[in-house]
Length: 203
Image (cartoon, rainbow, N blue to C red; front, side, top):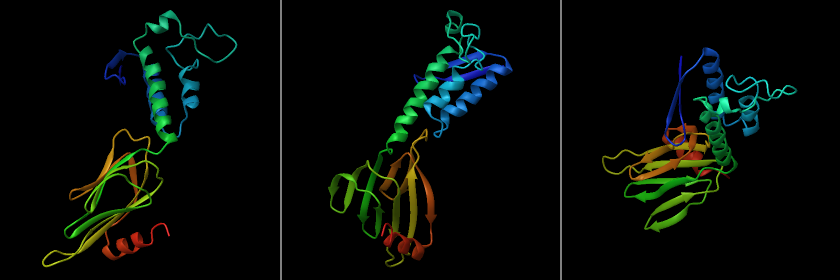
């Protein structure tokens, strides 16, 4: 069966392998992507004798597989180093919260505000654009102030870091936004509840 893997440099590695090899590497991909799995917990099985592409005869008195000349020539050998590099990148992101890019403030009849973090950046009138570096949990409130035929509304989001995410998430309201590696853990579209919850957030 064909096992396909995309390296960090964009190169796609493909190899016709046995089901045993494919199953092992699929399991390693799952460990690579799991933010709760440390680098050591990935390295242990990845370079053990359970890895079917490693040599199992060199180290007779432990469970480590060996990288021999024949192993280096295996088409899936580059995948091993790539998995380690991806896990290291992931763990670096876990150690510090992902940076958020934001544009918050107000415009005629609407506002987009946050609580729980400071924004470093520039301010032009009632609008601030910049980044949030140090944060753990943020409340976001979008609101429309009813005037004339415009109906008032409000929506609340609560977000937390998601350092293992492969792509940025975003919350967009009119010309305002929050973008970065985060997940939404709470959301309320009820106007009164949303406004009330935001008013007491963090108190």
